[in-house]
Image 1 (tube, rainbow, N blue to C red):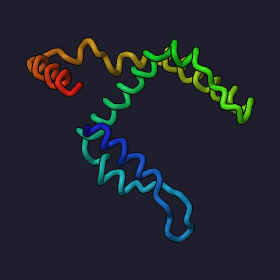
Image 2: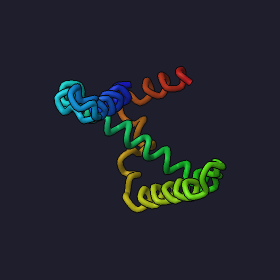
Image 3: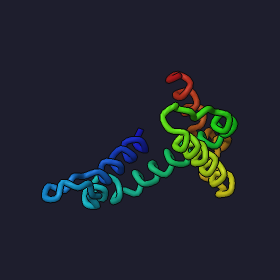
Image 4: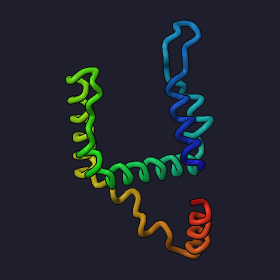
Length: 122
């Protein structure tokens, strides 16, 4: 949960409205106070990112076969499909699998308890 909380706070820090210009701006002070100054929160943010990247990679076949036709704009539909292919290609070439190894997730002295907790939440 901490990784999700850190992710939300990171997104919030990127979407502050400047009270004078009314433009969206980033708030680095907010980010540092909520996430950046806490190494464990940054680690948890990385964990959520890595798990999400892994999940997207595992969905490659479904994402490639998906129909992205909205009926609104053929140009935008083609661009959406192209962006998905571009993302998947970059994931495959970037070695992101090493960031999150689900085989190692339940290793160590607390593995049985963590697995039981996960199974009871499902």
